[in-house]
Image (tube, helix red, strand yellow):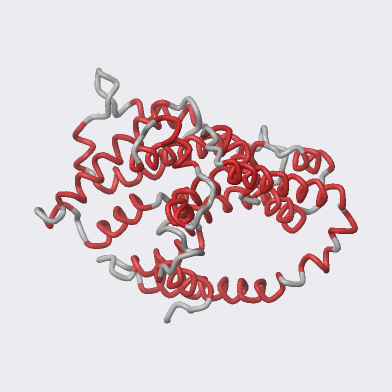
Length: 338
């Protein structure tokens, strides 16, 4: 499937294997190319070039928007481009985007009132369902009785998690600054994502598959990728504040210590690592190689998306960010006005 997509994109390259500059005139097409490029896997150089080209062109349009108001066909397209550059669709929490797209669609010049009303009704119905699920979550562990059914996994998970906490405490007490890879090898577990995803597996999967449980127990690569994205997104959003509170060095500080890079350069490198991990995650989603059912794969991907959503504006746990509160309220508790 992906090789066919790459070949289609090759049609838009010049003799230097670069994308034709004339493609930059089609803003809507650029936006679609940009969004599609985030589905790339490792080794898909054409899609990587597509991402770089479309990102560069869209950013230039944003920079020139104040000079030439006609650079976008309408306000709706401008809003879509701004949002995509902030966080592409493939990296975004889907239901949060639903509310955002409803609001954006309302200002579209050729908006269809019937489609808009249907979207709002669907959003409100799903939101009411989520509210009911939130009421049940606190009773989930007790009802499932997982501590009796799978003590081996529970004990192993929590033992691994505690070991990583102990490792970080040891580093802190010794004043030790780990290298970046040494830090990541420990931190993708200490972020507690494997514990979260193991619980999620038994919640969303039926029937339970013994082969999948073995892969779960051995920390399948899709679990590792999701965990690394959560860890690195967390570090981007929280590390500067956590360091002020006396925490251990995070990915940014580890890279700075190891390479001598500046804060900005280290943050860019961590963003690069997130992008590379998403490539690997996209590979692991392929049904032909994945040991898990679709529902769990979706949960693992959604954890990565949630991480980039929650830490998009910084440390939304330790600091006050009204944008995050407003986003959560509109997604879970405030119905769309009909």
